[in-house]
Amino acid sequence: MKPKSKILIIAGSDSSGGAGIQADIKTVTSLGSYAMTAITAVTAQNTLGVKSIISIAPKEISKQIIFSSKDIKPDAIKIGMLHSSKVIKSVIYSLEIIKIKKIILDPVMFAKGGAKLIDNGAIKLLKSKLIRRVTLITPNIPEAEILTKIKIKNKVDMISAANKLIKFGAKNVLIKGGHLKSKIIEDVFINKSEIKIFKHRRYNTKNTHGTGCTLSSAITTFLSCGKPIKKACELGIKYVNSAIKTNPKYGKGHGPINHLNSMKLDKKFK
Image 1 (cartoon, one colour):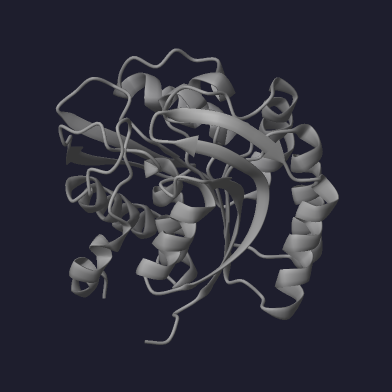
Image 2 (image 1 turned 90 degrees about the horizontal axis):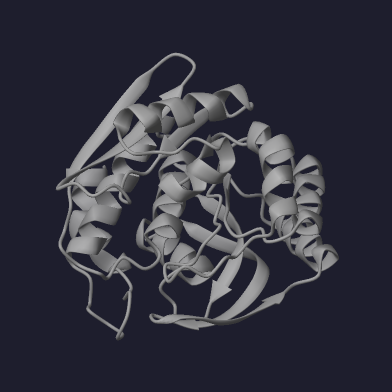
């Protein structure tokens, strides 16, 4: 099987393999594309929490992005954990050089166990400079609340927050509804011309580590293969839901999901 497209992933590493760049590589590969990486930080973590975070120097992050892309030009880029203002500046500088149009931003701010993965200066810069440069931003509810300063209690609040992100310069927004306590999860997709609500059932499991990383990488992969952005979101959500449903039940805390589920779902994505 020949890879269908090439994806550059800019994100942090997760030593437990369930989230971060490891989840991204697994997702891109499972969906039939080729993954390249620029690692922004190295974490020591497991399903119970984060032990430590080691930052990669911004210059080295920039080198990874530019040097890799000069040789193998990516069709799309997925951006995950950017923990400091200097890192965000180096990524923006690099994006201006390599000039890739399809970019998905997952504004990672917290680990599943609650550890904060980004500082306040970086949040401000992400909001003012980076959001407007990407195709889609995919915050969960806590991230959307921090970015917009809107308290989200229901679908109406999600729509208000998404519209505020559009006002900040975002082209497309997908706010994930998994943090609201409901049997049916609603994810809100918005741009200037439409609103789409993706509804799906909640699976009763604590094994959801890396769902945000996985979703943004899946969307990036489908987008890179020529799917429209709304369809890429729909297919990405289906992939993640199946990965949660078939999770391998590893670890004592918030375990990983099953990235290999696409091998069974492959026909549905054609």
